Length: 483
Image (tube, rainbow, N blue to C red; front, side, top):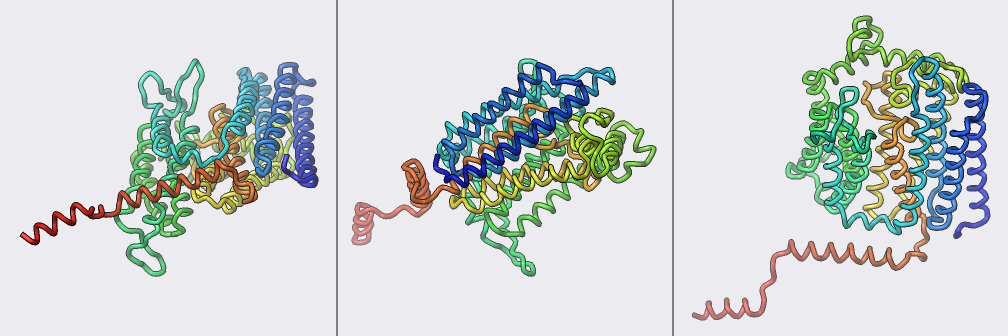
């Protein structure tokens, strides 16, 4: 291990703090809803604890310079999410609808922890993904539109964003964002100079050249395809916003942000008038307490129930196991923030916000520290997707923006979301390790990747340059002139 004693002690204190908070939370919750700790949960949560310890040791061993704020923050959020989902399962039993989302969520967390350990061991340098940029694009687009394949895709709650595999529902868009982030980072890293060149100037703002609009139009069209074909507003918005953010980071031109907003507003205006499900969400956002909107199909009943549940928590909450979060539809997934607000109160959700802010802030610092342009873009894109999801979920429930259908990272029920976001956290750990590593410890692999990137750039320049005249060509020309 390459960390000094003070740094190791600091990390050990954080590990003990996360452990103590999680144990106290689960004990209180089980005491309220069951009177004891059920054996099936006791065994599975013990496995989670062991795997968390194993992952922490792996992190110290193979990625000693990684910023562990990612690890501790994500572990704590995941455990709080499991805690609330299990609690909602118990309430569902009293309401006559037995569910097992909590037990499944713990199993998904076990799988995510194991996968994170494997990735930390196997990925030596994140820059290897640059070699697979266009392959990542193909895989990402395939995953994004795979729910449209007949016999494979499935519609749930009106949105066709799921596929059925071995009896389980998987949301492939959660994994598509990883591959598309790699492609966006690679593409923008290779073309950032062309995209940064300004065209016409309007006031203090340089507009990009007309021929550089191609990438943003293609991405915008793909996102609109998701909206039209899959009736999924959130995913289309997430991908487009991620690309615009990374485009701004690559070029430093605020004009791309303004252009992206114009494209988004135009698409949003058209979607509201063309697609009933989008119009219903906007109407529910603007008039949530209107009786006609409340009782209409696809109206504001779910939203209003979630708002009242959130408000009933007050400052300190009702306490774990003492609220009624299951009265809200989709309380353990789309509206888990409302469930947490009811039982943990304003203080509790603010504490959750602090954890998210710590993770996102650490991601931004990582993007700043990384010297490699590809790493900066990849870290920025991954962190932005997390921040954007938190904003849209919380903003939708608190009536800041319309509901989008996105889920709260690490906390909402669902294996696809949990595993995909754990991969995001693992990638950020790997990138932060590279960014914090002292220059004198750059290994042979890092140096070879850097040389390979230089050689690729030289090859592209040679291919784009006009072909030089050979000595034979010159002699032929001279003879022709003599004749």
